[in-house]
Length: 411
Image (cartoon, rainbow, N blue to C red):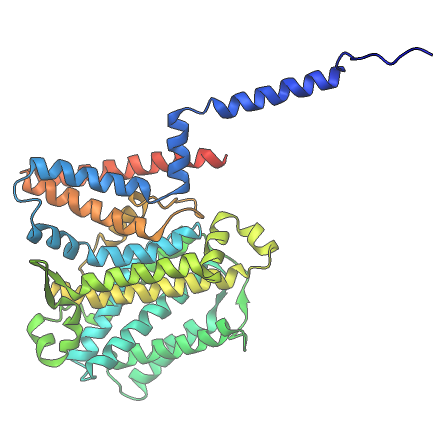
């Protein structure tokens, strides 16, 4: 017998494995500072808008007269209140990989219902507000039905009830349209709850862009029809329905004046932050936006999640309408024509991905503030409003390009 050798040469597969391990370790160690920054932005979506906001404040504080004053900073917050609330509604939808081009139209329809019921319809102002909020909820459910499974019964109920109340009961348009809308909402709510089918579902699903583009035209036309193209004036609201101006009331804090609408906006963002981060519904919203098919396989009822998201967004738009009456002082069916684009701008600059599944709700608040800071700073610096729009457009392009770069981390 021969003695066993004290050592042996490594086999080929062992040599190859050790070489591969060395290569893998080298790849990890070679991560550049830019790669680490990219991963940081991917893990913390609000980091980029916070840095942009702080940098823009610093630049305009040094270049624009009277920018860094309590009055101007509080004015910026007041100016972005309505767009911030619309942006919060838009964020929920974009997180599901959708988009809603009708948020401003829902807001206008809701506040016209509030104003006309409270001023010309003789309704108590609190009831006018509740019906306006219900109208926003109904519009949101309508959009949600278009992108999931459309049921015609709620729509037919709304139309038939409105026509019957106006022609058979002799009711005025001011009351017939909201009551018909509430009846349609009730019929649709039965189907959403799952207790009754609320009519057969039409087997088609429209892309969110197309569905809400059509809804935008529908809601805008309904606003003009319901209002007769007339503005409800400030002095009439003061006399008949002062509650509609609640969020326009001013509060002095730290030497600056804020409106109650600003506090409403912050409260909405705080509530949505909690819901999105600490509830099962919030996790389902992110899951649907990240991969809808995988979410369905994991047991999430994606259609119900989408319906609830659009419904919540519609109610938030109506809240924005209530705040808008306080901010502007009157109710006009032709106001906030650029509200849709402004809301999307706040969401995109705030770091929420247009492809869904990634973003943070507070990023939208920072995005709205960035737009407000840029417009205020450029105005105080003497720039033409043309260049304010130019700067905002450039910010959108940079934000989308940054989002594409950040998404490569998960690729």
